[in-house]
Image 1 (cartoon, rainbow, N blue to C red):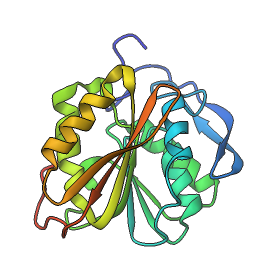
Image 2 (tube, one colour):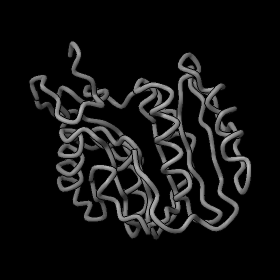
Image 3 (tube, rainbow, N blue to C red):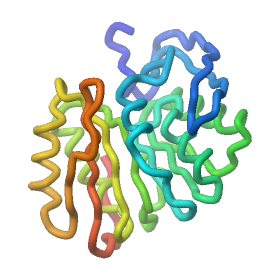
Length: 213
């Protein structure tokens, strides 16, 4: 892709639409992917590790996928929790279009795929799942997590998957230091070079407007 990254808002690379077969929530499904989005040819290893090591999501309320790409985490949550509202956020408009298209093709009416600033400020999330965009850089990644993790509902969990080689252990230390009051941070799984980190909110969610990156 040259300088055209998957976290680019409007990728300039050719779309090159393709259909791939993947397994999500125990089902073999066909999805559409494209160039200019993350892992267009398969469910990447990190996301696979995350999906294999997180519980069935809450069956109601609002759930969040940060950096949805073509939608593997979003679609899995939507299949497993049909009565919940799944918010898929990404800065990449092509990724959002693919997630919407795949949700529609699978008959999932509980998916809303939008840019971060389109999520209403008063929503608290009963679960957050993410393979976060580590390559955006440390400062931007920290800002992203500082914006979304405080929007966890009381006694709700965020699960993140991060490569050990890309700083999962240092990110865990940063999370524990940053969210040191009203939260707990644990490593819940390790597999294939990835860590799954869980952040649980114990107190009441923040109120008011939260700045988004």
